[in-house]
Length: 112
Image (cartoon, rainbow, N blue to C red; front, side, top):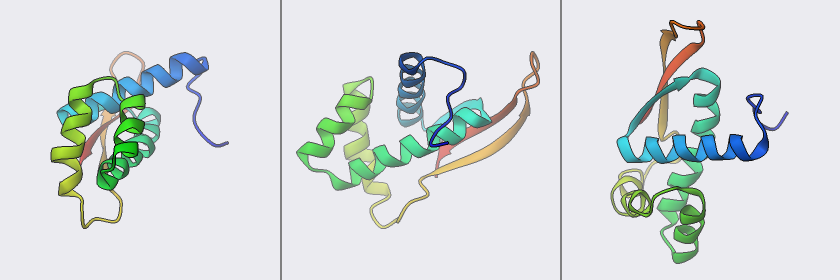
């Protein structure tokens, strides 16, 4: 299987992941369930790689995916230059126990 479906329709799944990636890049850290965190990591690393490229086409691709234009500006001016010499692995997943309501495994995803 190429990716996790989370028992959601395509539009809902894409919107959810776009929102979570935007929040991660905006705040630097986000708490979510482990499967969502693992899927989020794939997309966030691609966005940071676009930021490292830094050209106009990469900026437009990031604008097409991320929800807020200010986050795209922050990605290209502040976040991506930090990882200029790094070859990947821009995010960290830390397990955070289990959610109280349904005992879902939680994790904290943060930028390294």
